[in-house]
Each structure stands twice: as structure tokens, then as C-alpha cells.
Amino acid sequence: MKNLDLDKIKQESVHTGLLEVIVYLHQSYNKINALMKDEDMNGWSKQLRLLGDMSDTLCDFTTDLSEIIWLLFAAKSDESINKQLKI
Image (cartoon, rainbow, N blue to C red; front, side, top):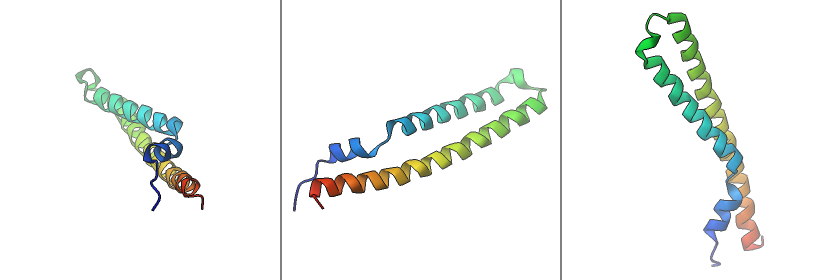
């Protein structure tokens, strides 16, 4: 059985641009949720609802991006493994 270079497979399979976007979305989600808990926002129910909607939308975007990352990783890792095995 041929030894595979796992670091090379990982390097070829992870799309850093998509990973970077998901990190920024997560940070934005955390900042919005912290803002919603800020006591200066008390009494601003309409704005809090809008922030809640934004938070939900960011979750949806993150979920969609995670699926794209997973599909891309699966395809690119198979390609990298096959290349190393020369299939």
C-alpha cells in the first residue's frame, strides 16, 4: 500500500478563500449577537428585530457555505488522492 502525503492532500483540498469567508461570517454573527445583548439597545425593538433577522441570515449563509466547502473538499481530496495513487 502506497503512503499518502496527508499534508499535501489537505493543502490541495481546502479552499482558503471560502474558509476565510466563513470565519468572517462567524465573527459578524458574534458581533451582532453581542450588540443585541447590549443594554444601550433596550427600547429599540424594531432595530433588535432587524439585528435578529441579520443574525438568522448570517446563519443561513454560513450553512450554505459549509455545504459548498464540504462538496469542494470531497471532490478535491479525491482528486489529490487519485493523483498520488496515479489512478
